[in-house]
Image 1 (cartoon, rainbow over the protein chains, first blue to last red):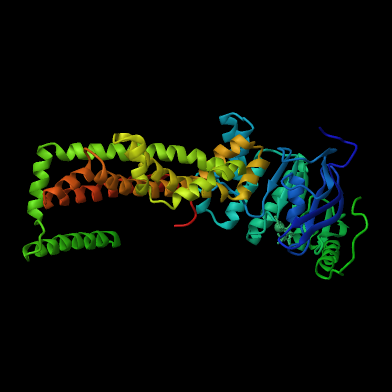
Image 2: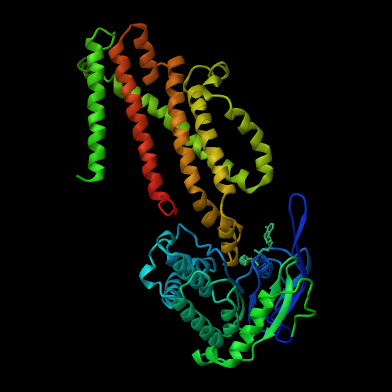
Length: 267
Length: 249
Ligand SMILES: Nc1ncnc2c1ncn2[C@@H]1O[C@H](COP(=O)(O)OP(=O)(O)OP(=O)(O)O)[C@@H](O)[C@H]1O
Ligand SMILES: [Mg+2]
């Protein structure tokens, strides 16, 4: 299944058109992007520029109108357990407890009950929800729901993580903690991560590369390489290089010239 | 006193006052039986075994019709929500029969099926079925897409998604449909028994009407109301147990 030669994820000429009542809406146009195995890519861009749409295409939940997405050399034709997804709207099953939510993917995969328990326990602890393992989602705050969704996606151990603003609803402290945990897991277990965020600091702090998107039509506007060393510590966050990159991305996001389409976005 | 006990107290006061007004009206020359007369009639009917026989006959009909109706409605509602073919095929008939009060079909059913248990049960079946099928269908089509997607990306296939996502997500709708269906079935049954039956609560009232036997009519009315209330509360209880996970309330 792994094609070590090529990129892990390859998006080529992707266009997505939503047919509305009286007009067609171009949500994505001419999107080309290659993501290497074990790369950490963050995606930033104004609201409505098609970030979630792009993620849905990679997840196999939405089909591109034109072009194609490849994962490990194979054209994406549906969802698969190789790609874990964290949705912008949490999407927890409200009738299941935190524990049962986290176990869902494992149960579907036929993992034995004791192993399921153990693995769920581990990830629930990682996101700090041990005390709420038997609570229903309605008892959780927004940030806690998001942490539960994260644990659920991690539990099935996918080689690719597609994360749509996963830390959006978290307080600053939990956010930093989970950012560090994510980087830690990523560097230990080597996953390919596509991480959508609207927070420029977060985008730069986490990524090997930041992809900046623009709206109308949704497209890749700029790609910024982040050559900062891992592990990313507090020192990195406070370094002048970080600030410089952050300013560059900020400028790309908030001072977009209309009609500027980045040529090729791949490495 | 807690809010709850105060509520119960008001309820009790209201019931006592209602019976008091009824009593006064009966004494003031209206052609009403007094509460003791009704209690006496109830005791007489009970020791003669009439109440038990009527309740059994009526409950049996309503439960058979209701259970069969709901049992048919749930799969049909799921099919309609899941497959557009099923929706296209069933929907015109459901919309059509929905506008007809089930009781209005009784003459037709009596002609076609005779005067046994079958015609009454089929009318109740229809009443329960129509109420339940529509809400089940609505439950299935309103299942949150992102929940289905979440299950899909976790590796679930259609069968699993159906059993573990669509069914639990539409349970609240199904239970609301069943409650409406039971209410409609009960009302339809009693009316059907007034028109064509040899036993049952409706039949008893119809007999009593011939002999101007008001206490018996009152006894039947009270039993119909109490049984309807008890059945509704049972379903409400099931609902709160099965759908307590919902965000609202
Ligand atoms: N199913 C759909 N039908 C019609 N239009 C859609 C659909 N899904 C998305 N769109 C449109 O496509 C555009 C991109 O949506 P998308 O959700 O991908 O944006 P986004 O970049 O994730 O925005 P946000 O940062 O607010 O989450 C939006 O203008 C949206 O209205
Ligand atoms: Mg989005």
